[in-house]
Length: 156
Image (cartoon, rainbow, N blue to C red; front, side, top):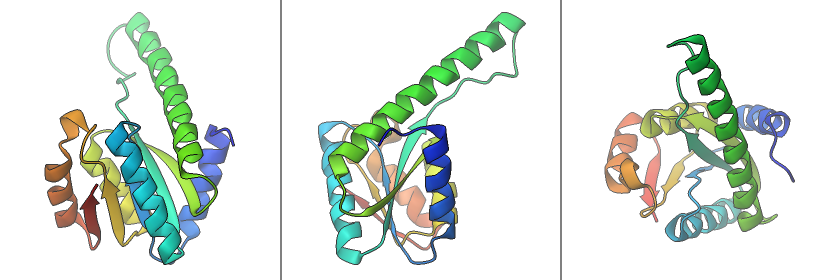
């Protein structure tokens, strides 16, 4: 399935209607990130719950600078959305057809974006990749997420 803004919207709507606890995983396609996504999919399947996969993007502000800068930011943000859709499609191919999955794109900063989505979809488990997060630092992000909600956070 191609991830488009329309399918993203349907996935977000279905996850917001979802009332049982689920699993939320941050999309990272590094080797460690792929292992974390597979682990999250297995956990969701074992629990028979929804898996929400979140792709994080760092968009440029489009409301500052000259007209040329704003236009450049808009084009860059459009390109980032296309990249996010491609990455989520690759994540879906990796996960397969096992668990019920929804896909979302969230805007950085990472911890607050994940916490905001978690507050809406209400998972009982958040899965973060240990490696491949780069500037996000998996362990410290996990500690901050644990402080922000009633969910468990696992770093794989």
